[in-house]
Length: 119
Image (spheres, rainbow, N blue to C red):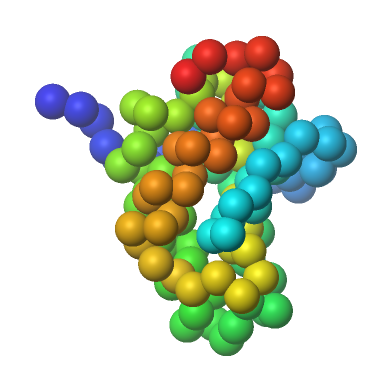
């Protein structure tokens, strides 16, 4: 049985964590998501979300956040370990769970290759 919970330790919550990711110049993008990342020195990956008002109203922003969290939670086994990820939707993309689920692990692996990590 795989543990698919999403406890606090898997989330980026502090400004310091987000700033550290943004200072690192590594990112990967496709037609759905843009992911920035950096190593975190932990045995697991963490997720941060950045969904601006440019994406849409509160309902649309919250939908994006729910879908990305769910995709992260469900695909945690496929994701590289020891990486902090800040995910944002691509401008003009629609909140589609299937596309997000396909995009997130692929981009996270691409980003991890830049660090020399393996998935």
